[in-house]
Image 1 (tube, rainbow, N blue to C red):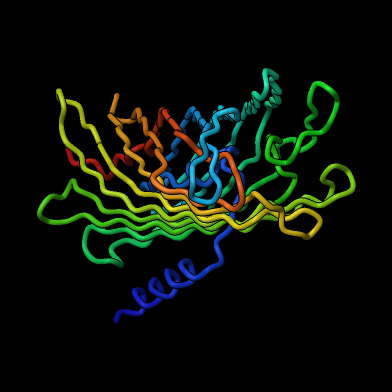
Image 2: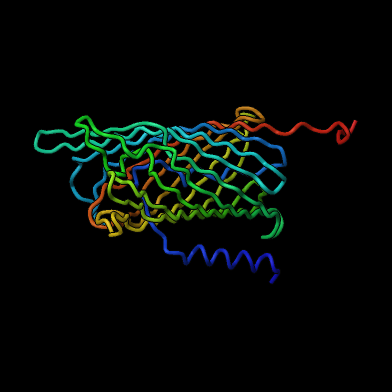
Length: 324
């Protein structure tokens, strides 16, 4: 076995054996939206996306309860930027704005809590290894951090500070490990098989509700995807199907496990993108739950929709490299 493949195998085993953990399902989809593709040195990418997350499914363990009195909706605006420092090394940033609403309707009464504001951000450094998995393949590792830019002290109309899961920010630094691989095949070069893993080790908010501590559960996500490109009305389009597994452990408050947090989820993610110009692309995707098993009783995702634009600015060609 080649040394590079041996190192990759060890890294994969570390990712798969780590104790995966959680964060609330209604928050900003940070881990979902990092990992822009890597291009040649000097390439700048800027993406702007809108994400709608609807939670109207109440689960007890893996059983769905006949109760739709609780509704939670999260609107997120996501700004991605990535710059290729070299042909292999790139830096990426994800900045967010979020609006969250939680409505509970029972016995003719309605309770509504809502917040909005700048959310936490993510920075990620990635290194891409070409052809370590054979011809027409890529493998990349990333290490990053979540920056606590958002407020964690928003209050409701009665002046009461809202719980951590409704705050735009967490007031805690997280560490993020990221791994991605892809492979194209000779029988159809446009067909791509890809995998992606993210692990977020969360920090602790030491000033939660002024005199408590709060720690969101660590989170592990794994993606398995199949995609293909083809021409439609002289436009390059890309369609894909992905499966996502998410595991999150319980949150902690003052060092003790918090019930009704954490769980396991499996999602199906169909997506579609098209090139609007050589440097601009449009994409839309849905996230549909296939399986969920939560700790205790929790509101879990019903569906999520994400759409956005991605613009790529390539470096200028050097005149000496142009064949005339």
